[in-house]
Image 1 (cartoon, rainbow, N blue to C red):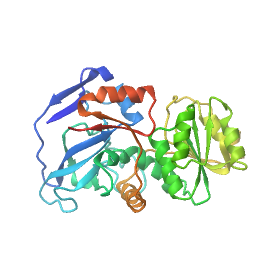
Image 2 (image 1 turned 90 degrees about the vertical axis):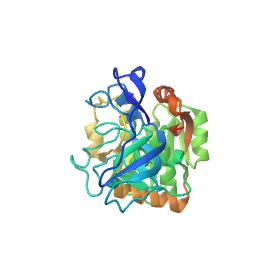
Image 3 (image 1 turned 120 degrees about the horizontal axis):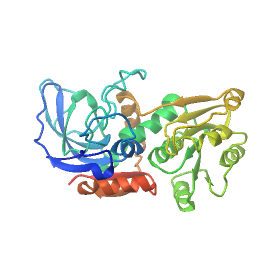
Image 4 (image 1 turned 135 degrees about the horizontal axis):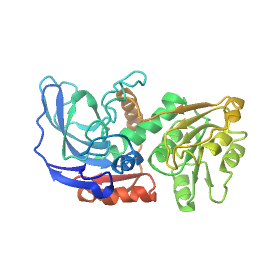
Length: 335
C-alpha cells in the first residue's frame, strides 16, 4: 500500500510517498481501506514542524473516511464493509476532557490517515451516515466535531441565540451550518465579499467585511442589539480583542484556533466587566462525534467542500491551505 509521510524534514517539500506492506488486524483491531482525507490548519502546522514535538518519519493528517476491509478477533461493534471515520482522539471515547483522553491523536502521537489501509483499534472508529460520500464524511472528525463541541457541548447554543464566526474555513463554515440547524442567528466575518455572499447563501443572517470595517467587533455587537451570545474564535492574536468587543455581557468566547498567531495581551477589564466565559477547546470524544453524526443524518446536512485533490497531489492541497483561499474544506481523494 502507499502512504505519505514527512520524511526528510519538517516541510511540505519533506513529504514523500512510499510503499509499505498492508497491515493485518490483530485482536480488537480493524483495517480500514481509506477513501478520502481532509485538511485542517493543524495538519499544515504539523507538516511544517510547528504543530508539536514529533519524530520523523510521521504519517500526517487526522481526518478521513473509508470502509472496513478486515476485522480482528473479538471485534463486534464494527463489521467488514461498514463505512467509518477514524476518530481524531483515539483515546477519548466519552467523559470529560483530560490529559489521558487527549494522549493519542491521529497525525501526531499516532500515525495519520494518509495511508491506503489503516490499522486502528475497533473502538477508535465510528460509522457514517448513508447520505454522505466518503469525501464529505472525511471533513467531520476534526473541523466538524470541533464546531459541534463548541456550540452544543460547551456553549449550549439555543434557538434565538446569536453566534459570530470568523472567516470561511472548515470550522467556521461548520459552525455556521450547525448553528443555523439549531435556530440561531449567525454573523460571519471575512475579507472577501465573494465569500461573504456564499456564506449568506448558506444561511448567514449578517456578514461583515473586516477590511472595510476594522472595528467589526463593535459592528457585530450593534447588529446583535448589544452583543453576541457566542463567538467562535479562530484567529488568535489579531482577532481576540475584537471578539471581546463583540461579546455581550455573560457571553461566551470559544477559542479553537490561532490562524494569526499565539501571543496576545488580553483586556482583563473586558473579561470580568462583561462576565465572559472564555473556553479553549479542540475536537471531542467518540460520544460527541456520534451525537453530531445523528444530527447530521437527521437533517441531511452536507459539508461544504472547496477543492478535491488526488492522492498524488497532497503537497498541492497543503499549499492551498497555506494560501488560505479556500471556502469550507479541502479534500484528498484516494485512488
